[in-house]
Length: 301
Image (cartoon, rainbow, N blue to C red; front, top):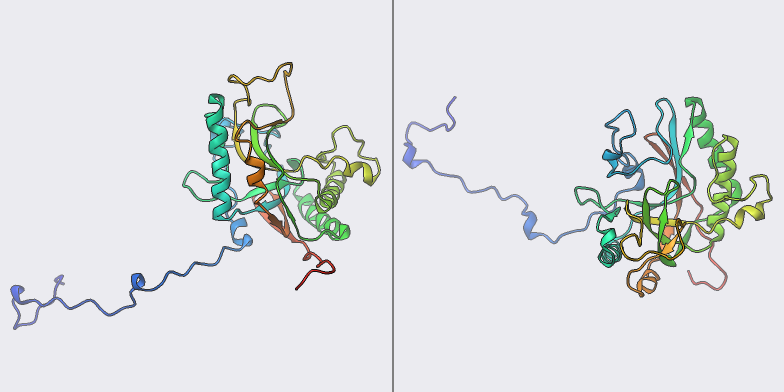
């Protein structure tokens, strides 16, 4: 069949090109911003497919796992998720760039705000250590027990404002994270206590209880809730290792950043809302919605 069907009275030179159809012109219409994707959609694509059956630091920029992967086990993590708005991402990018420029030892500072394609990534506040469920039969009970524990603690949706920008090492001291330090918060303390109780039921390590006997009273647990933070970048180089060494300190847990002194003032502009708890087991992510915050007396609306 010919590409163009000519009638008997038409020659190739006489072919008429029909005018474009009067379809809706997208360029002439005002742009309408699309609604944000629901968190349940993001959860389906929140992790990458494993490309190796063993721990390979080269696949993670040189980072080593604090908890090695074992085939047949289920890596588990409880956390709060934060998806920064464009203006918030811009502010965090500025802080990362300033910290990178201060010390040549941090030139390898890698942002956690975007992936390799430039797509914005969600950030998080850890509510558990990296846990490992060793049996598939433990997955459903863990989800159920966590949901019940969160419901019992009566925690509600809340907001948190970062107080400072700090460096925080991983457990092995092989990687350092640039983090937003969060203040003490009643909801965070309640939720952490509930998460630790469930972790203990499954013989898993607890978070932020170093030096505290797990059998101590509830009030003792709440004293260890000062470590909540949001990682925004990471480096394999120890902060201060290139000319800003800290006298007399061979190893350390945390250290303030050396970037501009007004970083804390700029961080005070961030008011981060948390309304659900995320639980990842393997590739599966589930959510526990927190009840809406109660309106205080005297508040309008």
